[in-house]
Image (cartoon, rainbow, N blue to C red; front, side, top):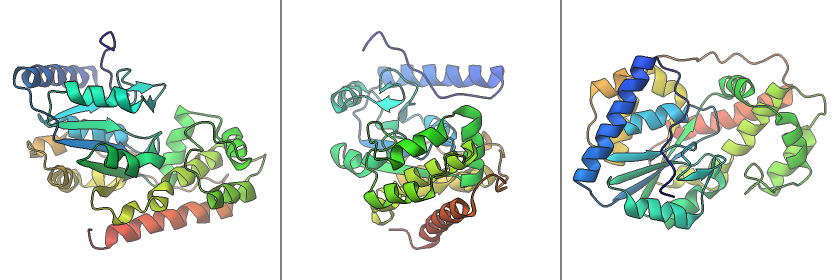
Length: 281
């Protein structure tokens, strides 16, 4: 494991900004090694791919108290999936930072189990409007409709089908169309991965904070302050929030998505909004 090097998620910022970020990360790691502290909190960053989790990781990385592991980091991940629990525990044991932060996108079905196994732990579950998430997903990935068919037929060999309830699988089978667009397939993935939040009853778990991408990019000062308070992170400043700029928030329903799929995703998004509007656990 010592031969593997750290990696972060894709960074679309300017070269100068990336160099400043790299210098900060190296400087922070050096300071942590000089004054090591045992891990006191494990943080899981959850959400469907293309929901803004890289941005959220950047926000957490801005604290001097954190060590962050992106899903592109070979020390903690293999082909974007979290490595065996024993590997992660060794990373925790050798960490010099008091707050251990790790992505958990392919592990959405295991969030409660991960928090129980790595207590004390907290989770930030980030939701992005399904329209923008689907648009972004088809620009980055593909094969959504064949995956949809495979899952509807009962295949659970990889992370997409893990933890999927029978009712969700039956719904996917009822909605599947061989001529569906890739955007519709991406919307279906947004649904079946995000619905795991409710299937694990995470809305009632005080260790989990639900967040919205749109709030993070449009009201960064408020949202970043709330994140730092929830995690007990030191180092919040307006400069951290100022790094976030308004990004793509369009909410335009693609024309090639069946009305039943639009309703399905809209209803789930409304459930998330209802949780956010209710009292904090």
